[in-house]
Image 1 (cartoon, rainbow, N blue to C red):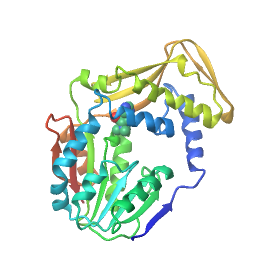
Image 2: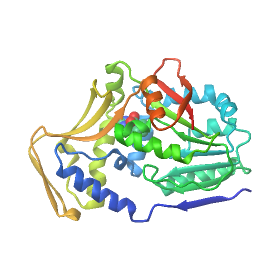
Image 3: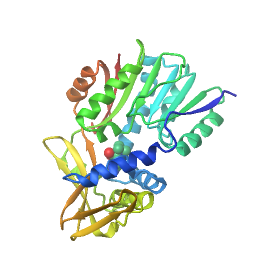
Length: 319
Ligand code: AVJ
């Protein structure tokens, strides 16, 4: 049986320090913001799994359709011996890829969640005893170092999560991914595409209100971790399409004037009635935009695949 290694490059207390910094910064600026990465505690991750099964939330199904359809082609184009997956979570969709990569030697899932990594890693090892798994507990948005595994390497960043980054953050992120790649290596990137506003808004404001619960869960996370006294019922879920910037924004709107205390930060924050706090940006893309952002980071787009309905794209690019 091949080894299952876990390397932590993230200090144990990094998460706590980052949450404090994000909440302090986000609640004291105008307009107020909280970054989307804090949605994903155990309950938030469960809610996200539910979102992926909603009739309105098409991205997960569309991306899986492309992966199933194109996995063999991706394997032929890359001949990858190492698959690095950024934000691997449960490594669910990755299985389609793993099954089609006959020469694969090592799988490197990268995530901030140690529990997700160990669970997914153990399961994979059991299914594929010849595969080496080297999990990295790391924040892939800040300076990643990869283990010395055999090339060619394929770095996968799926789910459309790149859309959670603002344009300047995307540029920094893509440049840092580029710096990990040697000649012959490739990046497989999942991007949700611009489409009809009603389809986009419904995907982020579903009838069963699962996304509303997911959005409000960030308040529960801040309550638990920093002793804050947010009442989720004081806020309404808002999802809107910004046609200039071509992104969906999720916000929480205060239903009445209120003051929230955050004891761990020695902070009291006032909300005006109707005040909206931004909790997520989910950018939607076009082929030319993706090609341009990749090129700006020194990556050349070589393949562009969409689902049958043209809702979502996977792109392959090389250094
Ligand atoms: C996991 C970041 C791709 O932006 O669509 C789902 C998260 N937010 N519903 C997305 C999300 C609201 C999702 N990503």
